[in-house]
Image (cartoon, rainbow, N blue to C red; front, side):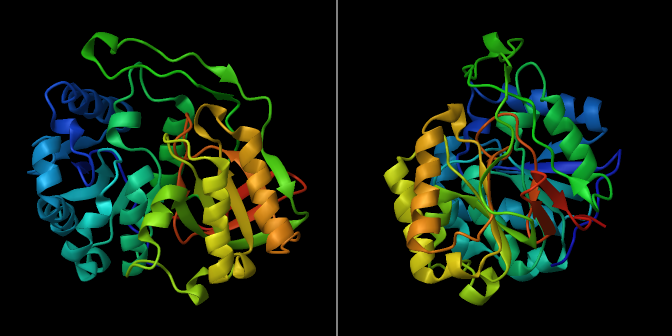
Length: 344
């Protein structure tokens, strides 16, 4: 995998709307200003919008080719040092016909986002460039009341510095509160709840290693069998990281998803699984039973380490999972460690 250059103070970063274009809608566009100020004050970064980013959800739905053009142009622009997804959605897959993998490969840059952005990460994985399942503009960098300190520190440690032997620690708090995106709510702060569960080891002992690959379950389902879906050999020895979206799919849906992975042979060849905390802890216990049922009972992989309740994706606060980076799972010590740097 080609690693992008690390961020440094004074860099210019671009926001792109690759799926839902709500950042440009009149009632949400204030979030661009919030993110711009926060990135400047907290990280010393200058945020710019690509030409179509703020044209609104209706326009961008009608023009997936322009969403893709913004992304490709951001890679090609030497003044832009990193690219941040505005938010998720449900149709990033429509960009596939317009993606130039050579552009990504020849202009490697930090790219971060989650949810529907899973499809973009797999486009980058096909191009052979490390990307980052992490914060986006609307949910995180433009968070009312400021970004969580856990996420701030993760951004600084993984995107700005050498993260070799960096331990992805469990955050000791979380929130199940939702604040409507409305300018009147800008100063509201979500209530933090103690996370007393920590990392849960559903099964496995000792240590395993592998390169990270995964994303949001619903989106992995959507890109399955497309040109960006990795071959079985590419899944071999990987650490699979997966999580569920705000749609809160049923445990039965998760079971069906896992059965598909088993049918493809993927569960037979991976080295471990990292699972994100479900949003609002909906189906928290029920999901665990789905993983045990398929992985242990049906796939007969009682040896496969599974770490549950991790901080990435749709549950707040979120951290960063870098694609294609060597990782170690220590079941006995309940540790997740990045074994190599994710940026150069």
